[in-house]
View (spheres, one colour):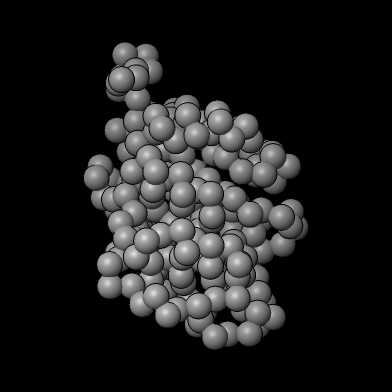
Amino acid sequence: MVRFINGVINYTVILHYGGISNLFGSNLYLVSTMTQEILSVVENLGHITKIIIRGEKMALNKIYNELKPINHSKLIEYGTKEQSVFFDELGSCKIVLSVPGMSIVYETLMLKKPLLFLLPLNYSQMRQMQLYNKIFLKPSAVHWDDLNNYSSIKEKTQEEKAISKITLMSERFSRDIQARKEFNEIMRLYLQKDKVKPLSINKSHDRSYTTDLNGAEQIVNSFSL
């Protein structure tokens, strides 16, 4: 069923931040910065009518309080919903933007929804994204390497060093006007109609790849590759 908002076809984007556990760490820098740039892009794309921002309630409330003085013509909704309600929202949306997670991958695969991976908020999400790059065939994603003077973290980097680098890059990114412009342009290109595709399994995926993250192993085992 096609839904309408004020007589216009409803083109809803879901912005999803799973795994927000530290309200004062690098993830908050990154959530705030990415949200501000994404809202700026959405504001200037006529085909998008609404953006729903989901995630951990306290963190999103803090982000909302920081960004609410900015006026937007689009419908914007922040907050947390029960899983069943969120699943219904996924079913009716047109596109999903999300940091690398677990449930969101299952759900978008099931619903065959276009999914764009955002920059990971923490070490766990970084490792999951490394795995998704192997499991899926050219997944739509934004990587640190896409920004000048930033670099993605290598797979075998020690956890402590990786966390430190994520923190430093996130803090620098929040103040880096040029990098934010680059991120803004990447998002604008992706959010043009039909630029983001649903996830598809990479049939040539090397099944011997392993990780010390149990959740990621479950994802691998759940797919019949």
